Length: 481
Image (tube, rainbow, N blue to C red):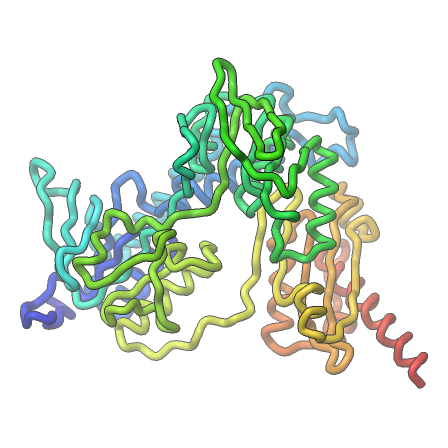
């Protein structure tokens, strides 16, 4: 057996590396180990190849967003008027067609990548029976019998599912979680979104763009607390323009299902009727069925597994990556965690993950940032200057009809390095990488001032914002002379 090693019992194990879950983290871990010449297998259900990311989470939601933007003609209304529509009566079928097409294509790509790298796919659900052994059920064995698989190293990449409060009677039709969105049989006229986190606000903005009257209920005083306050306020203003109602500082007491919809009852006494109620109450690690105790492991109350800087669990030959280990729970970081864990498991030298990681929020409009926020810097007593560019001042902004977008640079007046980049508007999740690269290479605002950007582009906003910050710092220097 090529690459096989002796396990704890002295027996030859079936695989060098066994990965539980085929989402972004698991997939990258498996392929990275395979590229290093190891014998690798991945365990996942046939219908879930690609994990939650491909089937119910990231890819479906972002594809749905693109379908909404296209079919509503929302981005073109600045140019052609508020009544502009590509399609007047948008149905779930219209939205689902694009989503299912992309899911199918992405699943094929993942299967092809695994096959091309000679990664064995074991269809089914895995559970630990020993620290080095996993029982896979629902796979190839006749009559659904379990198949025992052993491995030198194991990577847990099972991901998460939407957390469901016990007090809420989910019915998959009227009262749903974020996974249930793509299975709706109609576009609701009214909707309550419970939770103003990333997922809740993304879906709230999509349905608001479709014309649904959305009410967002959030127990905290603001949404997206980790984002720049000015950017969040801009998003809030835009969503209110799409008729979204916000109820901050409110807690849901109960949800009463009615013959035609549901009534969300708040602890303050407010009653909000809606066709659909969507709960976005965080995520729960999918570790319930892993029988972690058989491997000498345990998860916390949210199903998350604790790991060290190399993504090793308390059992040294077992690793965990992706959403199942908690923050930041992003597909992009999960991929890198999977790659790094696989390299460490294979004894290959590898650099640590770079701390400078971008955050992308696919609301309508998009938000993306990298580095520190104004609030963070102020609390840490770190001086900074702000440079701002607004899309309406750019030729490209006028061409695409985006009058609300903006890019903000936070610059150190001491050494002129970039401390943070915050973008709101069209292409924000793409634009942020320019700032990320400059920051990662230790560049200063001077580079952006002196660089030549294609014209007309949104990337030109970097030069405009850099000049704004530079002029402010120059003015301060003159006053200080």
